[in-house]
Image 1 (cartoon, rainbow, N blue to C red):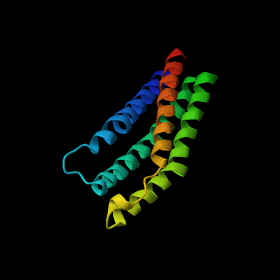
Image 2: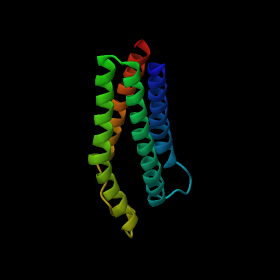
Image 3: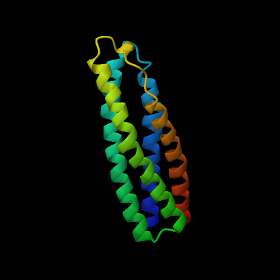
Length: 142
């Protein structure tokens, strides 16, 4: 039962990452009339909420995997997912927040230099997607 719960939680987490990072975030900036500052402000709120939910889902997945006696492969993938999330939260998000603060404070947001931190965040999201797919499969195989 624990492996099924852990797999379900993993796939919910995967769906949230795909839906927000690869659907909502890019489409938001195509909305008519949405300014860069407003879009960044919305993005900050959405990703803060997503990251909090991700941390909670990680905890639930760890507990469920422990109860299920998950395989070594599953545990390695859990650790990789946790490390990716930690790097996003502790290293990349602060850089993105600094840029958002600068854009929101600027008289002309277009004058604020673009940040390469977005590329790092998206790259880590891609890694996380692959890891979550593999983790869900490993948990189902347990």
